[in-house]
Amino acid sequence: MELLAFGDTGWGDELFRATLMTIAVSITAMLIGFSFAAIFTPLKLSKFKSLNLIANIYTTVIRGVPELLVIYLFFFGGSGAIMFVASIFGYNEYIEINAFVTGSFAIGIISGAYSTEVFRGAIQSIDKGQFEAAKVLGFNKFKQFYKIILPQMLRLAIPNLSNVWQITLKDTSLISVTGLVEIMRQSYIAAGSTRDPLFFYSFAAVLYLLLTFLSMKLINKLEVKYSRGY
Amino acid sequence: MDFELMINSFPKLLNAAVITLKLLSVSLIVGLFIGLLFAILRLNKNIFINRFAYGYSYLFRGTPLLVQIFIIYFGLGQIEYLRSTFLWVILKEPYWCAIIAFALNTGAYTSEILRSAFQTIKPGVIEAGQSLGISSKIIFYKIQIPIAIRQSLPAYGNEIILMMKGTSLASTVTIMDLTGVAKYIISTTFKPIEVFIVAGGIYLFMTFIIHNVIKFLEKKYSFN
Image 1 (cartoon, each protein chain N blue to C red):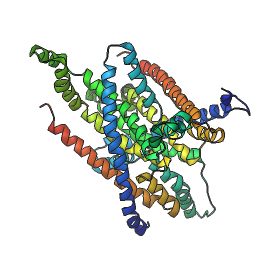
Image 2 (image 1 turned 135 degrees about the vertical axis):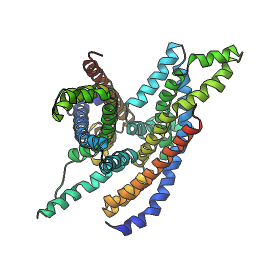
Image 3 (image 1 turned 120 degrees about the vertical axis):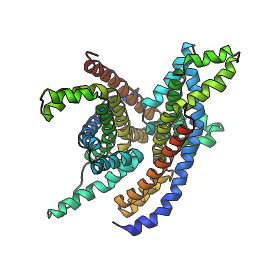
Image 4 (image 1 turned 45 degrees about the horizontal axis):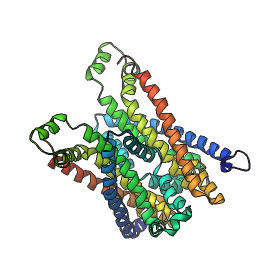
């Protein structure tokens, strides 16, 4: 227990901050994933074969390649890519992007591929009559989507999105290889300096369990909210 | 694009892919047995056995695989008692630690897949067996298990692919699998995109093969 004391004597406050970091990265990554899904889901559902192909390449590659490999690509390639773009605009200094941005982006692209599949499935399982009814009522495309399709899509997507959230949350542990101090990295540091890896990694496991448990409770509430009337 | 690097690193990465496949196949075989055992325990009416099996799967599905590997590889070595037993011969090798972690992890997911497959078997099938006078043991082995396996093929196929991606974490405990070698080449050449294309291509190829084998099996053993 002394090991978990707050302040300079224990690792309590460090691990607490690391937990907040894990939550921050997970939420950022999830949101980045949603923006990717917002781009790629329409491409998947498009009538044009070439657009379908682009979206399919994205989801297939990301879901078929290990997360760790994607993280290494971003970790080693991220600043290089940005420096290349900057050099086009005539900026030739060294640019370093921080681990939080690289990590959230890498995990975000992965979680985006899963979210895309979830949203595609949800939209496809909405009854066709709903689309037709929205059209008949004279709604414009924008209103059709926001007032009729989106609420129904969310209800169908939430159970699967909770799976995506769990995957994303657990994937953030992999960012520790880039040096971002989240739960895994902090446990690694603590384990190294106290020579007590069993305790700290087990404690990390408990923290992750707590996070998954609490988020499931929260998501269940959302699920109830969005399935009112069913 | 450095095509020369891509061509030169291809045989190295292909060799490393063999290690990935070894890790995958051994952990899948062990994991399947663990999964079957825990699926059966989950269906047990005794509440303690039931809870124990549920706790196991909750623990391993609720924590990242990386934590599990680190606990087994770094954590267990800390227990003095273990060092004196024959288990230490296994636990000091990163290769076996990784396999233990993978097998326990995939075992937890497999137990959930098999459990839900067992639960969706129609009672009529079992009743038909009973009315033919077949003993409950034979009903289980000859009727329930084959149906459950067929039922869980699509979900298990996904699990195999997830596990294949999971074996990349072996590289964090010094095993030179496909990801380990890819990272080594990236960090010595600083050409991440080229290496990613080759290594990612090999992973995608393996995913493609697994996907099609499962599809073939699904067709072969379909009910219709």
